[in-house]
Amino acid sequence: MTRKPHGRLAEVLDEVEALVKRMRKDLRRAARDTGLMRTLEQAAAALRKQAALGAGRVERYVRALRLELAKAPPAKHVAERARVKRAA
Image (cartoon, rainbow, N blue to C red; front, side, top):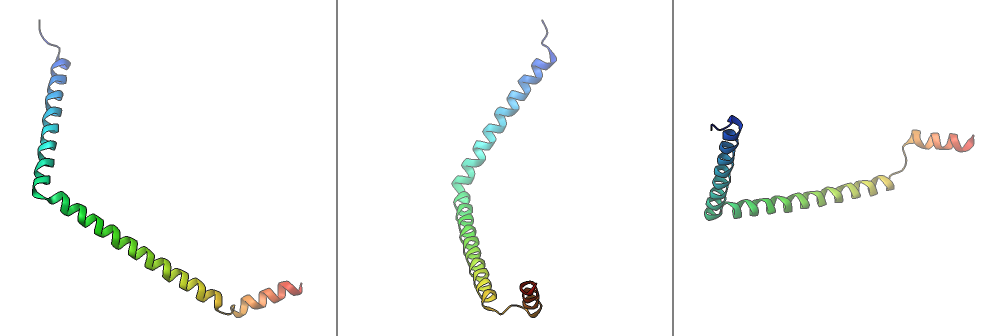
């Protein structure tokens, strides 16, 4: 009795999947042994910290700008429009 072609194909795919899983496991182990993952995690943490500091700095600048704009007298044409609207 001969095998069906798709049955053999399924076996080949299973073998390939098993090899890929084993290769992935071996690569993870090698990366862990070299300390590369720890270095990458430290770099990612440093980048997150810098991004948070930058975002905080931008928030402070925006707040200061908003407060300065609130203190400034209104532009002349805006004040005139407001006076015209109140008069009407």
